[in-house]
Image (cartoon, rainbow, N blue to C red; front, side):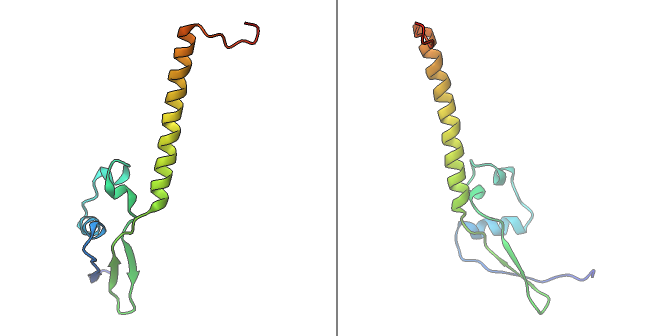
Length: 101
C-alpha cells in the first residue's frame, strides 16, 4: 500500500522483448490495436506476482489465433467485394437473373 514495487523484466532478445520494453515504459501506440502492425499479433506482457513482493514481467508471445482470424476476416471482406463487382459487371452486360428469360 503506497510503497514502490520492484519489477523483474525477463528479456529474450526478440521482437516481443522490444514490445515489452515499450509497453512497460508506457509507450503503447495506436498501431498496437490494428492488424497493420506487428505488435497486433502479440499478446500483452505477462505479469507474475512473486512471494517476495516483486513482480516478474515476461515478454509477449506470438498469437496464431489473431493471424488466422485476420486472414479469415480479410478473406471474407475480399470475397464480398469480389461478389459485388461481379454482380455489377453481369448486370451491365445484360445477363438476366430471372428464370423467365
